[in-house]
Image (cartoon, rainbow, N blue to C red):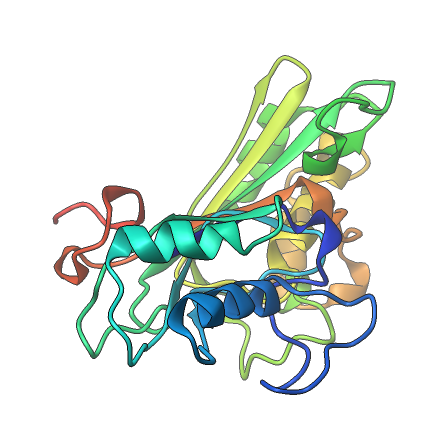
Length: 262
């Protein structure tokens, strides 16, 4: 399944309690909402696995999940039945059957994120839940040039939170692009996987360069130094969207989450 959600009112994707336990007060998660809806359609509890967890306040366009069900429902039934039991901020985009060895997380070869920033003197009123904001002038071209040092397999210790539980900080950055369209700057990143807060920490550090407070070569220094305490601040979550994971063509998934043939 592909799940689309506005993360503004959620404490992230991941369920905070075990199945059957009462949820923490005022800490709703997307996983809890989706599993409750799926369980209604299936007539029994359903557990899900996602392609990549998202933090509180972060959105997703196509979060891919997998689950096993002992009851048969056609894809349309899963999509419509589940969506009708979800809050307005969550929907199921599509559903397809997959092979027994498919895994939403481990079968994925890449993940794509976008951070959208409004760059103008006045804060946003429209679409404010989906935008970061920087009031000072920012040089998008300088940030793009500075970011290219992050390509390839690197140790991203300088850009992960101290709370990150990953066993190591090495990730392979496939692409990173920074571009401006009027007052909006988009940061688009693709990697094999991401660390906790990695995208938001990279954006926060690039903004230091974009404002002219540090030279473009500073990003390379941060990467080599592997010290989170000297890097830029963590960008707010609202501007971040998990666009989609990417899987090999043999998985039989829709084009938007499938790698092109080599």
